[in-house]
Image 1 (tube, rainbow, N blue to C red):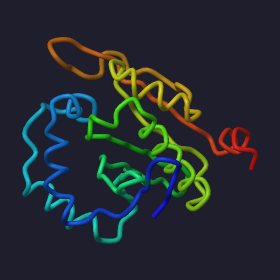
Image 2: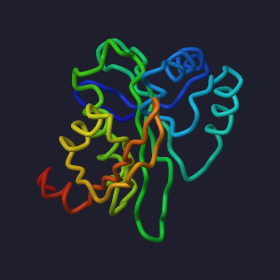
Image 3: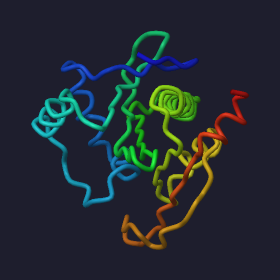
Image 4: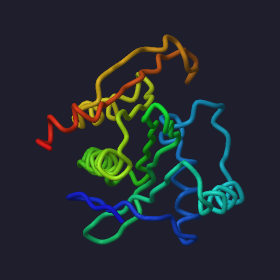
Length: 180
């Protein structure tokens, strides 16, 4: 488990499956996280993911819960690892809307960054975010991410095309910011 000031990142448990399915199927969560056609994610889908996730791999998935009372909020993780070039691609979702705009996402990203740079010895963290997800963009900027590029009209949502923003954070930038 890895802790911040508001959240704890921990392994997923079987007991999380039903709430994960509920959160992932939320219209707003799906809009901000899934590039495909917004189709229903089933309990069986999550069970398959859970079983595959427990095996050893080069991806790392964490459940996010509050430090104060262990409420499950969502998930985050390292979706791709490129060991040769020392870079990873991350993702995060907070499904419990009661905790939106209260610093839980920012704290989660900071804990994940610390894990990646201080435990994995990675040089660069990358992520992609849709241009309409302003809350996430602000969170990533607070955590030190910089825009590296824009994939123009990359995603089709709600009847129109939107840009996808590629953001990155280098280990030296993290070290400068944290004084390591």
